[in-house]
Length: 105
Image 1 (cartoon, rainbow, N blue to C red):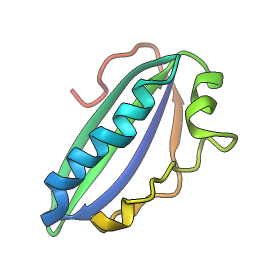
Image 2 (cartoon, one colour):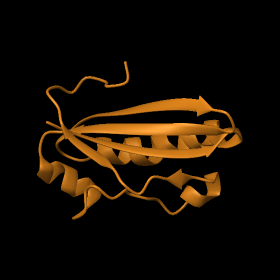
Image 3 (cartoon, rainbow, N blue to C red):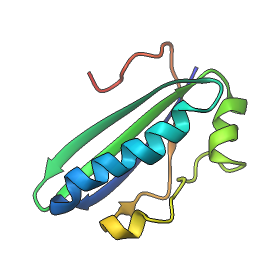
Image 4 (cartoon, rainbow, N blue to C red):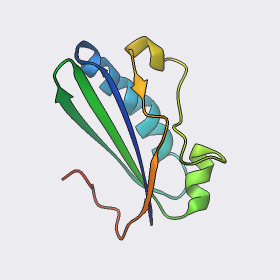
């Protein structure tokens, strides 16, 4: 199983709006792909920013590629990201994992 973890941050005043947006984009989109075994979101507040971590779990690299395209370690971005002041880490971490449990618990 493969875990793919993205990180981005938004100004703290955009936290709630971006959380809703992230559920409607990243979480919903990844969950709809065949081979997705889970999409887990963690939010950490740090001063003036809210950090978002989205970990998705996949049954194979083919499934990861179906979502992320040919460069699975590059972040997938959405047209309205800028509206929330998102600073997206351009690099996504891929790791082999043993289960589909929430890694943030």
